[in-house]
Image 1 (tube, rainbow, N blue to C red):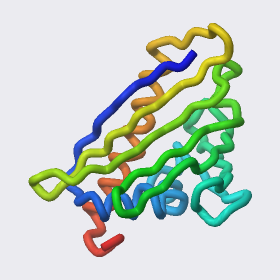
Image 2 (image 1 turned 180 degrees about the horizontal axis):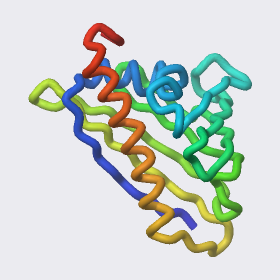
Image 3 (image 1 turned 60 degrees about the vertical axis):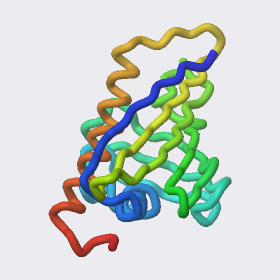
Image 4 (image 1 turned 180 degrees about the vertical axis):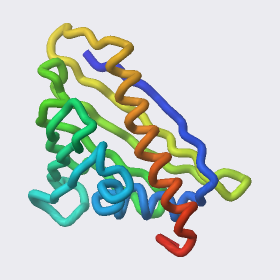
Length: 159
């Protein structure tokens, strides 16, 4: 069974700059701006493109230790990025995998909207509580907002 959730997060940062920071350099930037959430991201195999396997180690503030994920798609022209968590304690023994599809869309005011679709593929008929989904959405939103705050404070970064 698959459970799908959509979320939109507005930002004053232009789409190309947000994509560069949040997606293309996120492995370096996110542990720097939010170390309590994400301690490190290491590439196990690949060059960052489709098929790349990475391991994310969560920070002290997280209830999970680490996850392994695979890059499924990346489009630098259209600011889209997809990846799937395939192993790790964040799957909580309930999920086969969790897929994320991110698209950063330019807005008419010069900012952007991060559209995030999460697809939770459960094992068998396992149930997922609204609380678990809400916690995941809040974590994703806080990471995006931390990147935004960094870009606002460092106008020369990622231009």
